[in-house]
Length: 116
Image 1 (cartoon, rainbow, N blue to C red):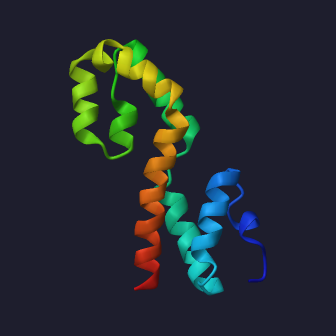
Image 2: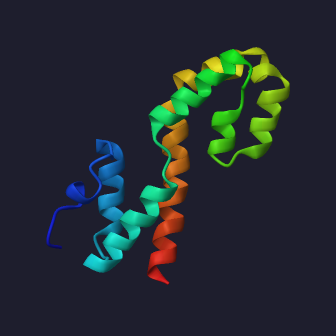
């Protein structure tokens, strides 16, 4: 590979970088660039999850869950005011974990599409 993976995707945190680096080590350079562009488009940034979770305090609870393709939970949060704000507060604390869990699924889906 002509340039290191961290230069291709500088927005990744350390844990996410290491996880992806281990998965893409068998791919050629063109596949890595394809992976990076596909993953970047589908990846959710923890800060966006945090900001959309904060909308729950202003009457738009569940937007962050819908962004992560958890439509059912998003609708439940919306109609229960973020499960009486308790769910929203828990998600505020765990916003990085929520984004990481979503991004792991996206990584594996993207890798499987690239290897086809």
